[in-house]
Image (tube, rainbow, N blue to C red; front, side, top):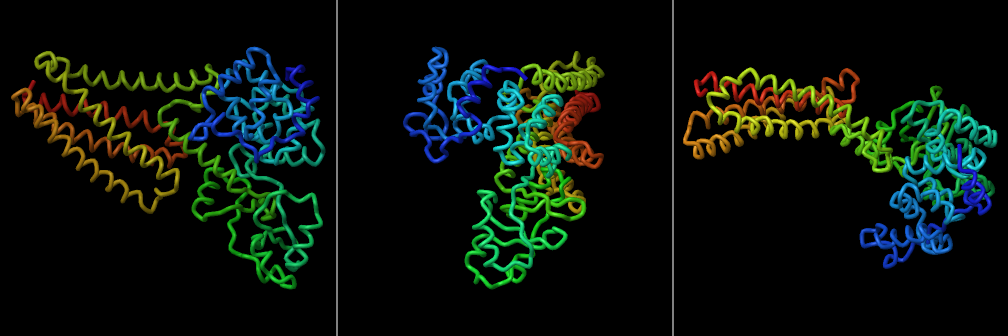
Length: 481
């Protein structure tokens, strides 16, 4: 790691020990607009103060902001000014800000700090936030930070890092409250009051048996309303959703959504309680997974504007090269009919309409199907029904578009046969689009390939190729060309 100068100043000012006051957001008229975003003029004022190296002015401007707004500010200033901003705001650069930072921005700042300072930050974060911060570091830097941690914190983070990426083990927090089922309500209340080391925020208490396996939960509101002498075993809720530690985070999010959970226990292979996942973590996961699927459909990579340019170029260029190959395939189909196009030039004018509309129809179907797969709406039980549904939609849309384009072509060029050919080709290509839009992602999903990544290329290839082939082929068969 580098940036000893940043380290010294942050460490001296207690940047990792102090937390910004979350209850004192900046006045909306000064820094935030009506949509709760930082105003451009406010960001410019901060950047001007940074350019002038006026740290006191920067601190004065940033101090009233909520930690989440400070994290947004780091994304809005120029990349080469982020380290200077961190030095300027000193103790405002607390753990709440670190936890809210964009992944790429946080990685830049963390890499500029030595291991002991990163370790101090990690010790103040919840386990899941500390893991998210450390997992992005290089292997060598990870080991250096872990070596600086307290043994207990190090063991917890190393255990989390041992689980697969994007699994419940990486997402869970080890800060939770669990008590034996033999307690009474009064015993639990006394326990919560006497033990200061318990988490500062939690919504329910997990009830465990002698093997530390969760057998139920008690909401805090229910605990406060029950008589003290009632055993927890009699009042706990036995209806609970347990999350296996190796479950993918997308499946975890789906369970939270399906069962309207606020928190859920995470269990190991033996069924023992080892952590919990709360809904605030799930909100981030849902946003990440939704954005990821949308961007993968377009081959745009992570799509984060803070991502390094070279990584973005590599991700996009890969799929652009694949699209280039499919475009050559579609153009080869056109080449088969170059004689017909030479004899009847109007075919060259109209054929992009057929392929373009088919591509749009295929993209619509593909977006619906990928979402249905991601949210578990599309399963083995209803795949056939979904295929028939999309075919009916494709037939209806194709017939409507075919009549529109066919009628318009007939009137414009006074050629009923040309209108009939392009209308029929529109119907055929819409059917191909509907079929490809559902069969491609379903087939990829069956082979454990992410349909959001690869489907678009295959669908557009099918619609372009069949669009050209159906239109030009019908023109030849009918004697139009």
